[in-house]
Amino acid sequence: MPPDIDKSIGDDKTLLRADATQGEPGYTLAAGQTLGQYKIIRALGRGGMGEVYEAEHTVFGSHLALKTILPAFSRSPGFRERFEQEAKLMYRLRHENIVHCQDAGNIDGVCYLVM
Image (cartoon, rainbow, N blue to C red; front, side, top):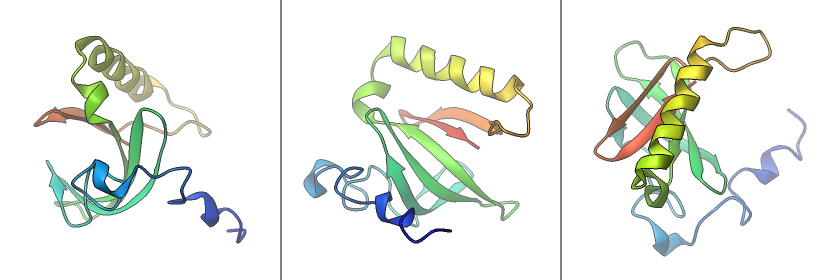
């Protein structure tokens, strides 16, 4: 991986204020925390509406990307519906250049996609 790519992950452009959430500084979930069958390994980055984590499937041991929407958005029924539609569409798409959605759900108000 080129050295400059890693600089954008976890910098001030992708982090919330440290006091804004209960997880890793700037993130909703913390390393070691579980969400269903997924154990959070580390935060990878965030955007305007969600966060992405490296997670491990606790049964199979595979490492995956787990995308969540921020709590403020997950409280909106309309936004949750759009997130679920995105998951269903991603699940049906099969192409070598498109990330495949393997799982999706809502656990304790945390909406997630697993890729």
